Image 1: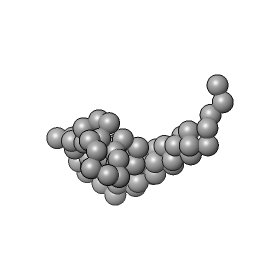
Image 2: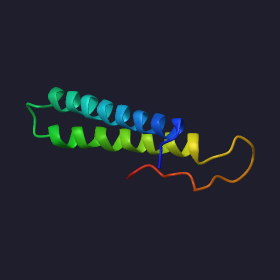
Image 3: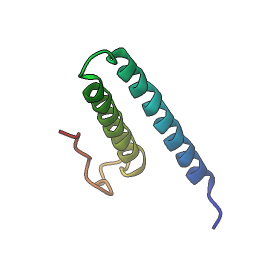
Image 4: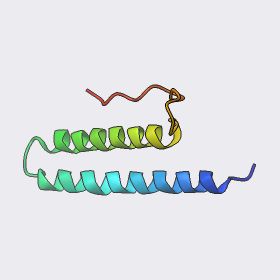
Length: 79
């Protein structure tokens, strides 16, 4: 089956989000590379950005602009 323009755009934004996460969290790792906290800081960065991306997808694609209930419940941030 052929992809629609929306599917192509969604895949492109997902690839961009992944690249941003890798670069941003890689920079966080570099910032803390001399310390034992470097892995924890990089992982915290990844979790924060994945939570943000998950919420963006929910808000843009799984909710309605009126008062209708969303298709899925609002995602909770990771603990």
